[in-house]
Image (tube, rainbow, N blue to C red; front, top):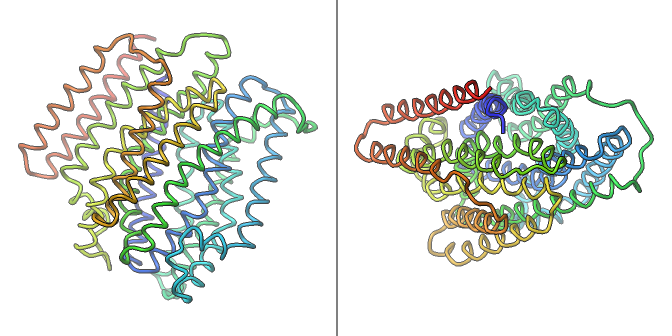
Length: 477
């Protein structure tokens, strides 16, 4: 794994996550923990549920291994046309039957007619985003294939700008404030269009000359097999989120919003490091496996990098999470009580950071081998653990039980994938450095009380790690 590619992905993702935080701050400012926030987040989750099945994860994990093996024009255009037809078909079905799907997705809303009608309207306004994000995902996979990681990871900035644009129009009273939720839903679509245009401006040069497409070719059959597997795996992941949304819809008002705000904070390190490492490693190990080379060294490096960069932020969130929530969200109608509730969810979500990230490495290892069986089993186990823990503890713990269920499910998935991979560390001494660094960091967090001092030290840790890895890369070059 090239650390320089990982660093490019981190920089691009950091900028995109920053814009995502601005978007969430806008939501918190205008909506807080009110019903409108719940409705908007349900609509967004509903669309994202199908996005992950047919778009982002599926495009990258299915396209790269197959296109690496069969790199020709026919394979490219067959996959492109298939993605376009698939996303358009799903959009048409979801738009036509939105009330039916939403009664399954968030049944708690169906008990109040006005709220449910409002939810359906918001969802239908945001659904065209599904087609646009599918096109974006395909272009992102092309850029990953040619190792243009910064452009791909930076592109969500344009999606977030589409939403923030409507918030600014409302702020300057160009648009009426009372319709702000509807404009946010339209902003999803505008942002999706802007993201697609940005990605296409870089990826079009890698499009081969148009050739006839063939849905009976061996390459497409292999792609379809992996796509179905990745889609099924993504569906299990989204089913876990669906379960949480269904359960949360019966809990006190604001539960869905609290979980969403907390997960956005947790998703920052996951997106920066977890997704970054697994994304960068997939093209690399696909190429090596094509040449029948051993990839365990690549995986070992990815694991060490992952733990170096995820454990410090996990510990920081556990000890200083409330201050983080207050700094990011507490303004407008978002109260101190809202901040406490978000922190409670964040505390239980924290364990997700390293284990979700480690799972991504092993998932891409199996997908690069065109092995879909083990990933599918891992998601079945993860979903079972999530459902069991959520149902067992939600009555006593409330919405925080859903965050705990997510964390335990991510641990169970990682453990299964690790055991099935037959992976063994060639240089286990590398892990000692990881745990020694974090043991010192843990002691610092316990002893010192000043938030900003701890924050600056954490930034210093990450700058030191980046310097050390960059220096090693130059030395080995």
